[in-house]
Length: 304
Image (tube, rainbow, N blue to C red; front, side, top):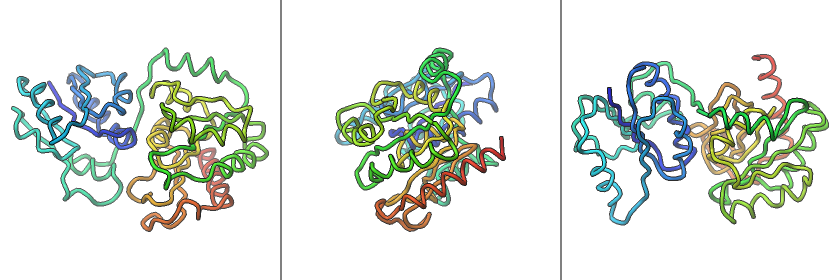
């Protein structure tokens, strides 16, 4: 059985599609999957167990990327085509069945929208796939003993970024309380912009492990999985953290946590406004974030 899975360009959006992908793998254990996604998100799917082919999509002017993708897919006969981009590409491919995410599915959380498009219930939560090498690497950089708190102080636009001094203060409060003696671990994506955005937090926490732009997505997932807690802005890294099962607190301001909040075995969001009503991220107080982190840790401990 051949399945085409057309998914998101950005990391966070792609992570939110991993639950249904894993559901399909288990539903069709003999199927082989071709996955088409954006270049930034490709690392999410590298270790997917049933992967046959991974195709990256680079946007071109006049939507020429869709034509280029079509040329790579048109010769195949697909048993199932899943289009979570709503592109309509599947109508120009030979497919026995199609499932397309359209506007009529745009209600509730994003993972519920995706599951509705495929007729899947209950809604599967996101997951991650890592290699033995990734896990061995994580064990080396974070050996057993002691706690680590992962911090994701960057985002794709400044309106989503919580003030760095509050990140540092929140870490200190937790390292003196529920996670006494914890070490900070700072994550950021590749490139000078991400490095610059994370620099103030690293300056305030000089003993932090610095993972700015040095890890693959699957390495980052393996390291985060060894942390006691992840706290981060609304970003792809935050969604990846939630998918690992590590207790993950997403910090929200102008984006809607009701639709794009973190989803995982132990995940929560704290918003400057309400889950449906955006507000400036600067309105999110240190006390509110600290209270949410403590409640998350308590709930995660009870569920363990």
